[in-house]
Amino acid sequence: MADSVQELMEAMVPELKELVDHNILSQTEVKALIKKRTDFEYRLRRRAADRRDFAKYVEYETALDSLIKKRKTRLGVKKGKLSNFSCSRQIHFIFDRSVKKFKADLGLWMEWVAFAKQEGSSKALSKIFARALQLHPRKAGLWVHAAAWEWEEQGNVAAARTLLQRGLRLNPDSEELWREYFRMEVLFVTRLTERRKVLGLIKAPVEEEAVEGALPTSIEVPELVEESKTPNKGKQTAAEMEAGLGELLGGAIPRVVLRHAAAALPQRAEFVLSLYNVAALASTPQVQKELEDAVLASAEEMQPGHPAAAAL
Image 1: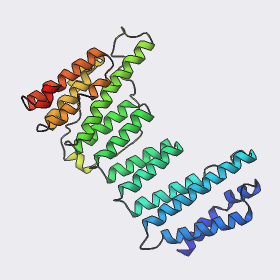
Image 2: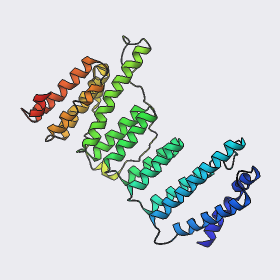
Image 3: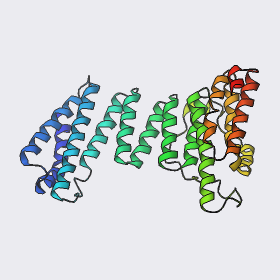
Image 4: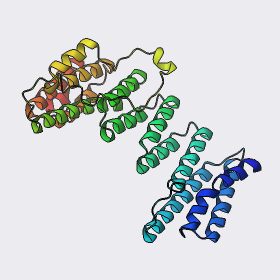
């Protein structure tokens, strides 16, 4: 243990020396830093490691990173090649070891995700999501979170759609996943319609625009064992997708998702009715009305005379 900690400390010497050379940290501060990191490293390597030690280590490195950034700004020092991301890299290293030690702790994974988002580390974030999903494929919220990042942050609707479909394949009764899938497809139609209006393409063929966001999935999750044993209830058939392309701006794909949701949750008319409010995100009053009618029709078919449907 002592040798591995010593090697780790020695590897930090070049970047710490650079910080001293630029008067960002003093020799005294560096000595204190090394002592603090050494202490944390020994704590993390104990057989009975404490989750709180990982959290304290991250907190310490975060404060150190903030201090270094402030001093660089005040001194007008440009970021050096070695110390540029030293604290960030160290924090990722801490999180990596923490999730290996506490694999079942989803909270730790989400803390790491939050940090990677804050740092704008897209490559790191995609790998973190992929690893977390492999370990927690039955956590519907994790699939939703990953898909939301692909769709809202990366602008990759194709990747988000794939993640939601895979999540539904493993969690077909998840209302959270079905709601997010329906919401995303409604918003996609809205965004596409607005874009075409701005570009003056409102009368152009829809098919050329329907592939927006068809980029490679950045969160690459290998096929899971559970998927090979589970029918894919979330994914549309080729025929359904083809029909959706032809009527895309009219909300065809959200209606397909709605139909699949109703089929997967035949006893949950109340949930299907909750999608009525999501339809308000539609691009035009006409599309909104058609989606609202589709929701009401599905709920009526599932539970004739549902009082909530009548109220709408």
